[in-house]
Length: 122
Image 1 (tube, rainbow, N blue to C red):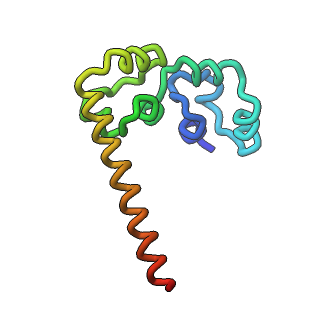
Image 2 (tube, one colour; image 1 turned 45 degrees about the vertical axis):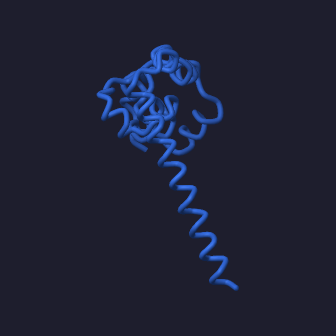
């Protein structure tokens, strides 16, 4: 597997990984070993970052698109994410509300489909 793919699956920023990780394709066995027994550098990256956009978005409770709308293009560290959650800038409040509305709508649609499927069975 390509280093880019492995980093994405591990939830870490490729540019922050060691040189040997970035320069060497990875076997499935080596990847599984990283997941089950992560080395210190991997644990450190997961703990303090910098984090890739999908991880930043998840930690902030917004979508990746919401980050883009807010102009957050750079990877953030755990401390920077905590600071944003403490200060709650207007864009973050707005994007979290948008994300909550999207989740609620997804639940409503899922329940509606389940109800239709139940009626079709009877």
